[in-house]
Image (tube, rainbow, N blue to C red; front, top):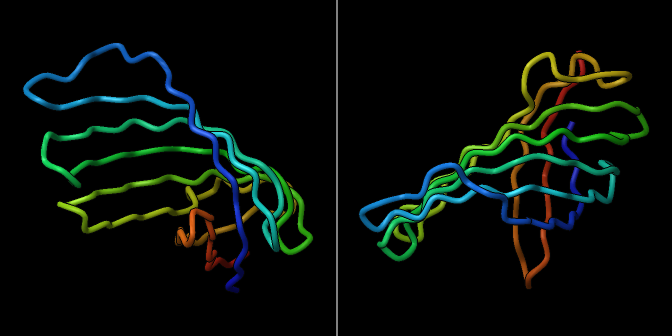
Length: 130
């Protein structure tokens, strides 16, 4: 199955136990999202990031737990993020953590693509339910 929708995200800086050196900025943020469309609900999680002193080069990892409904089925699941920016070229992977689905979403697997257009966030979720 493939679905599309929109989401809103709020990132809030959190304390970090270690500062970067040699021009690297380390960051830690909380994630608070609201999903709209065939995936409807909210998520919370945390992100770790590293910004280099080269414009457009950075990396991040994140984990968030999504709670709500997916095509009318209620439950939760965990998304894991891996993002790299190489001088403005982006590579982003968001996948459902295996066996993280609960309730009617037990057995969920899949990946999400994030798109931005005119300052608005969109998702495309390609998934299957066992």
